Image (cartoon, rainbow, N blue to C red):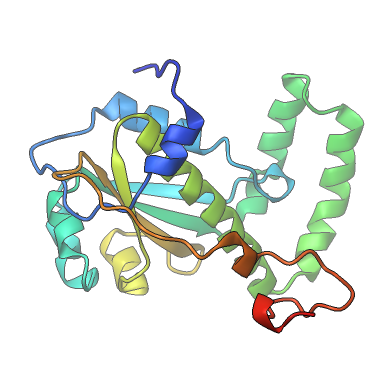
Length: 223
């Protein structure tokens, strides 16, 4: 696998931008794609249950042509489209994850025993909507991590939310009852340099929870 050395985090952070046009001739090596996905899964998740799942579409992308709405350029030119899913039944993997953690001495046995005793009832009491919300949060974390990892490897990405979600799952043979589509991420070598973008001033989006200030209130209206 390709190893990245001396990558400056802030360079990656500041130079990551959404790219919609890629070099269609460039193919990401299979081993490097696996490495990037492995690095992305270092992202945090609730109780470390890692509900994310990935479907890499690097061949026959044309199957999605009618399902990605206004994102045809990414579909046609990217090395791959990565569908990020959330597994609504991710607790099924709890014993496997916690057993591995105990074996690798990163979790005491008594902590694993506590989780395996308490979590089934916790999940049983959670509504489907609550499980979905938690899964979407964790999926967003791994998606952002994937885009930063890709940039560190010299690739560009674009997160895509505009697609026919149920139809994409059906086309790819994914269980629509168990898996929640979170987003598509296009990845490849940019055909042209990405253009910069702007962000709101930090003062517009941060509140210090002062007693006399309403959260979200415009600074101009604060005392």
